[in-house]
Length: 417
Image 1 (spheres, rainbow, N blue to C red):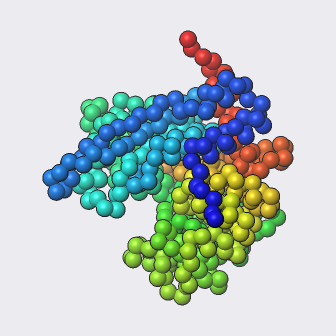
Image 2 (image 1 turned 45 degrees about the vertical axis):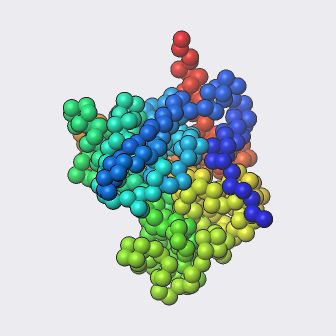
Image 3 (image 1 turned 60 degrees about the horizontal axis):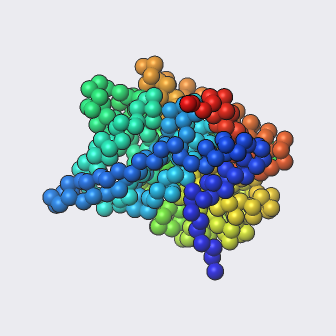
């Protein structure tokens, strides 16, 4: 019997409590950090293509802004829940702190199935949702970004709606925009690239090299596919890849670029020639040196963790490992690069995009990638240093760094009135 998937916000609170105990956090500050600062639930009525009105439910959770404006993506998914959005907003808070960028954490979502909606319906829903949150977002207040099943086009609609309401173009209200509207070069590959940099640093720590190292990617979307392409450039060998419909495996190696082309053409990785089909669970248990869960949360449960054979796990997804599975991986000496470090490349380049917008600058892709590499490798070394100093896992170390910086900001600001 497999373990039940936990409530994601309960998982986030368990992680916070572990960090708070290690940090000997003041109980009052710990209490502040256990609750989001603001939760907004929005009714989103949309005129559908058939002329009927359908009402969706949207959320925006602003977790903490002690270190700067709220920052976090918006996801469109049928399984969005308020607890999921709360958890993701907490993780964003720690992630921005770990990366040492001046943002707090937030997250948004709409319960919908974007795969069954037309472009016009998605646009009308996005604009209606934006109108509902317009008073609580802005470049100095809360800066949304793309997430699961949202993209640069969705950000363009948010930017336009917000700017129309304000009567002036405000490019800094969102990140992950099209380049033509002030988006940053390098943003589309940033999450995967940052995760690849972290994997490279982990290999150094383990005393190994990426050259010839085998790896598997669960979730061959934007983050997972770019991670695979960049890790291949670093010399590693992709042997398995999957999406929500299933995966493919070839122990002699897959060509990440060709797998991506097949997925773009057919809509899924299954059916890629010269490879056997595997389930997502089988992929996680594949014999390989590096495993990258890049899909949704709670993919690696305690039962699956016992069967993970990889030496390094790079969490490109948010919350892909349950707290119980964490313990198993730690006991089995798996070097886990936690999500709030591993996938922070996206928010680091979002920060760089925001800075470019505020100062009306435009940096080259090389400049952006160089700044990303410097920022994320510094963050990795900081977390690894904390891990060694406190004799804790990389997850606990990352939480200690992230939570510690936010707690210090709250303590220094004080309470008013």
